[in-house]
Every structure is written in C-alpha cells, then in structure tokens.
Image (tube, rainbow, N blue to C red; front, side):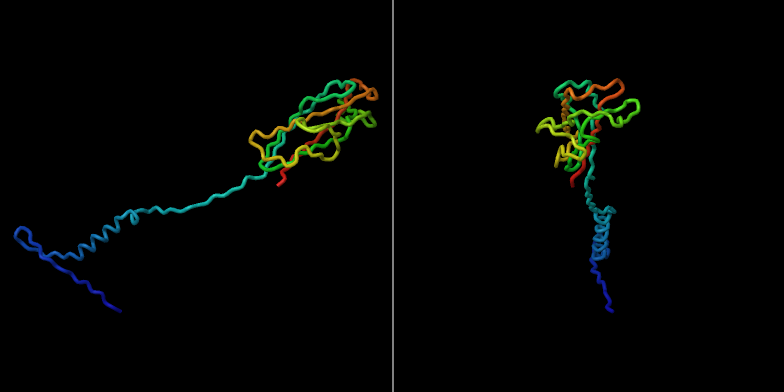
Length: 193
C-alpha cells in the first residue's frame, strides 16, 4: 500500500501591512472541483436515446358494387345496359373477377323470391365487357377475370365500368305480371400478394 502525500505551498500575502499565509494548491483543487460539479454535463439529468419505429400497411381490399339493376322491358335485338361501376380500394395489387349463378336470365317469381322451378330462360346468355376495352363475352358460372394485376389504389379507389348486353329474339317469351327474368352476379376482389 502506498501513501499519497499532499504538499502545500504557502505564499505569504501581505495586505494592508499585515501578512497572511495563503495555501494555493488546495484552493485551486477546490475551484476545479466546483467547476466540474457546476458544468452542464454534470448538472443535466437528461439523457438522449433513440427509438426506431417501423411498420407495414396491412393488405386490405374493399369492393363496392351497384345495387340491383332494373333493365326494364327488353326489346327484340341487342339490349345494352347503362354503365355499371364497380369501385375497388386496395392497399396492394389485386385481381377482380365476375361470375353468375347461371348463364341465362331465368324466370323469377317476385312474390315468392325464388326462381320458378322448370321456368323459362332467355335463349341467349347474358354478355359482359369492361366498358373501356374488349369485346363482349358470355357470362359464366365460374370466375372470369375482369382485372388482373390491378395496382394499389388511391383513397377514393379505382372505378371499373362494365357494360352488359342481352340479345332477345321472338323465341323469348314475355312474362305475366309478378314474374321477371333474373340473374345474380358475384364480384370477387382479392389481393394478389
């Protein structure tokens, strides 16, 4: 074990005719200790730390389809619907499909809310197309692609406009009151990633 020894220098300071002994080393050490204790780094009780936040947006998709469409009275020849707008909102690439419960409009009883068993059907299949492109094609009972690889949308979504066509001829029969020709379409939108 070693012993540390402090030595003091003393100076004689004369003030007003009297002399006093002044020890300088302890005063200097004391002044340095006070300066260190009063420095901002020692006084501060604040520490700085960093946090990283990362996130991913969930795959989400929303589909808005038109309500029931009343085509009214179909004429002999080609009957084209008004534009039917489907709105897709998606946070990721998506596909949109269409299918029907049958391929031809069939006799439906409004009072009972059911298709008429053994009822009549229109001779021609309902046809559809995307309004901005392509030719009409017959509706099917399995999913048919409307949009493949659609881009993620903005907040207001992407509008896909469809047209439908029904060809009627004299072999198709007019129905009595309370009965209509009906078909139900199903749209399916799904994220592809």
